[in-house]
Image (cartoon, rainbow, N blue to C red; front, side, top):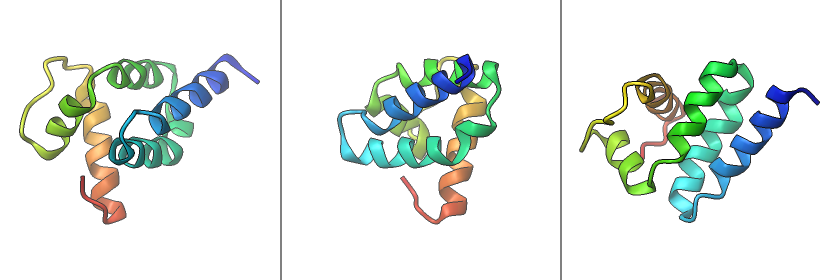
Length: 90
């Protein structure tokens, strides 16, 4: 398995094991559906995104707050679009 493959597996695991079932579902489903198309830079950004606290990520998703780090914007946009298209809204 390549380094990117191992990184994808690790990030998918981290997405499904957040500590709250709600965030597991929000981030885990997204990771399963999208990380296989992410390149190294996008995977790095997603990994950094996962280091943030669940309440902060949730606030960003519902528009209650804006992320302070511009590197998260693309990940956040992908996450919002995924859940809108899938019919599940955080």
